[in-house]
Length: 167
Image 1 (cartoon, rainbow, N blue to C red):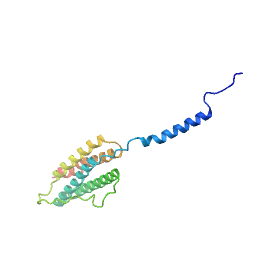
Image 2 (cartoon, one colour; image 1 turned 135 degrees about the vertical axis):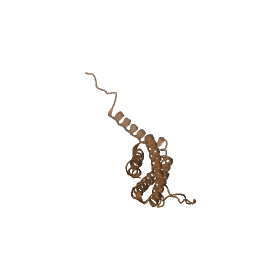
Image 3 (cartoon, rainbow, N blue to C red; image 1 turned 30 degrees about the vertical axis):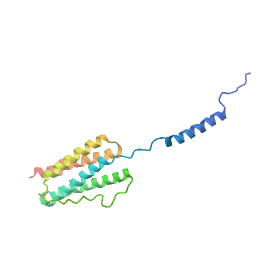
Image 4 (cartoon, rainbow, N blue to C red; image 1 turned 180 degrees about the vertical axis):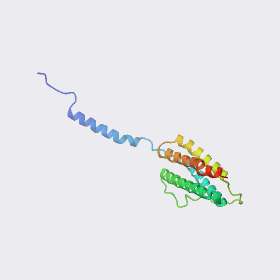
């Protein structure tokens, strides 16, 4: 009977497995560090949310017949700003500051209060901007911006449109 001398011994298999484990453990260290996520687009959405909230608050103060709907829009846009601040903080690794949801003070001459049409136009602009950006992103950010776009569109379509047509 011929002798059975396998070409691959148990020792060679164990050495190969050890070498493979060492290479796979070192491979991630050789790659480049992950690029930090861009937050510029989110910051522009944050500015829009703050602007819309301020415009809706000012319009609610000036127009008592639409104040409930406009106050609801202002609260929703404030919530959107808060969510965007949290996502920016998560992406940058910096905790959100306590003043990060406050709107910057404007030192201009008092202008006429915004109208319902001004709020509607601002919300349409924000919805378009958020939906275009959501289409370019993926994951949580796409969902967040899609939700913001849907909320702005719903505010224009439902409560504000009903109030606008009742005039």
